[in-house]
Length: 258
Image (cartoon, rainbow, N blue to C red; front, side, top):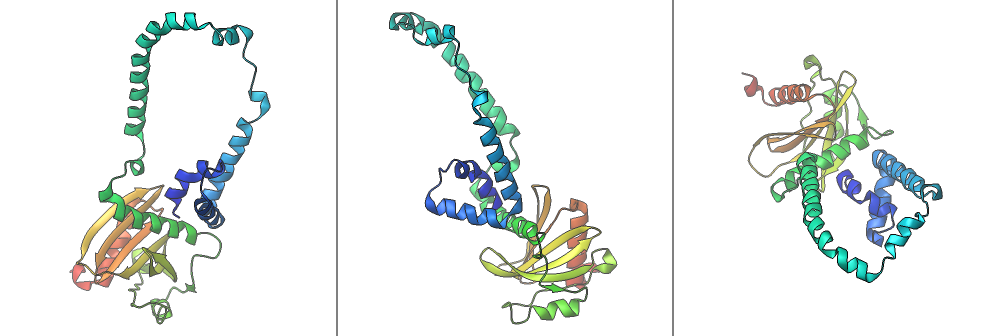
């Protein structure tokens, strides 16, 4: 389960409205994801606060009397209610339309975005997960000739490992991860105090141009080249991450620098 999916199901999970499989999947995700667990705990506190008896009061007698108005009176007021209903519906429709227009881009889902968005969402989740505890690196080294051999025998491809310290993006290590159901190489670079995760795995198709996205405060750049898929993720600004990608591509393909 990804963080976007968990965010949509948090309230249902809190209200015990998910089936057994959904509840189990959500419980596993909350155990592994600190961010979603924090949101869940905040919702739980809010739910408890809203259920406090002090917030509920008995309706005034005058209002309760109006609820028990004889049926004849109800009939006489129906025409007026019919006149009011179209206005109320129009107001509600306008409110919903305004909410949709101002909603974040990730809410406007379409099948054409699904595949790319899923990979980027997984990459962001992998990036966030890597920053928790000791999940960032399996091999710690600034030497590409140490990091690259570490992956041998662990993957069915050879990842491209480049030293970009001279470009302001020092290599600090790597680890194994998973995207799209594939085992992938995750190379870890730094930009001052920021971490950049660069995921790599084999590509079957032709090279593809860059796709840049901003999601939940992270910049994601995806491209395909040299027989590999690449996804770079970080909380650095978009300009810095584009500079990193360009530096990596130039090192990976010296001809591009000429």
